[in-house]
Length: 294
Image (cartoon, rainbow, N blue to C red; front, side):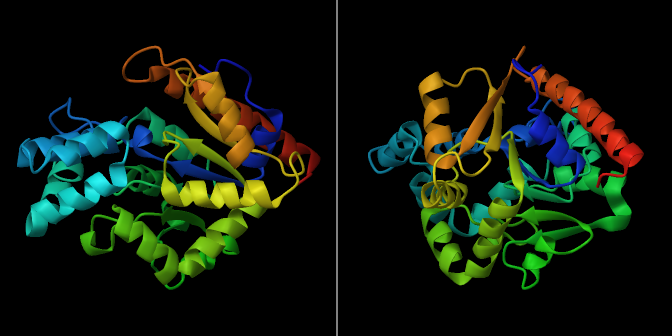
């Protein structure tokens, strides 16, 4: 459950499909493998397990330290080099082979029926559930597709894979080098991302606050406008986040933090909060239909 009320402006924006939903690994964690208990790893856990596979020693201690210090991009870059040609197979063993089934959270997000969803995940768990619900009008685009900017003006529903898809491991954005190259080679996508930030409200669900591309774009917008002149975007997280960090996110990235009670290790409180949001959005859409105020 949300510790406060859902902001009325956010509810209205979702009802009018003026919101871009951004989903991260915290959403994928609500899926379950075919064995009934395996969960997709969050990024830091994935890197720790990958580092353990290559072993700890004098020549790998810097990788473990980078993970511990939160320097995940460099850690991933070094791990990828160590795995070499086995990297793609290892990624798929963690994110594809367990045959994850979507959870209740995936369904709730799909039922919100946002016109645009940005996925920071490599897996296709959300896409599978969303396709089941919105099959007739859904397109999946990768950041490097030549027509990815179609989501800005198109009439369909779009899922944008911000970091790529495991169906094409060579194009994944996963390391410091890949982030840097992508901003140059695919600048059109990042321009479209920036445009969406100016014209839509963003709601981040199950995301960390350290994604380099997202941070850069949010900070550019926050510091290029007069404080208070642009409505905030929203960052949904558990109530573990320190107040100082919440204030920094609002000041530096124009992100207003919305907190939910975790309740348990499976974050069932997030599902409760999204259930409430879906109900509020349904009521708002009914009202819009009744007064024809679209």
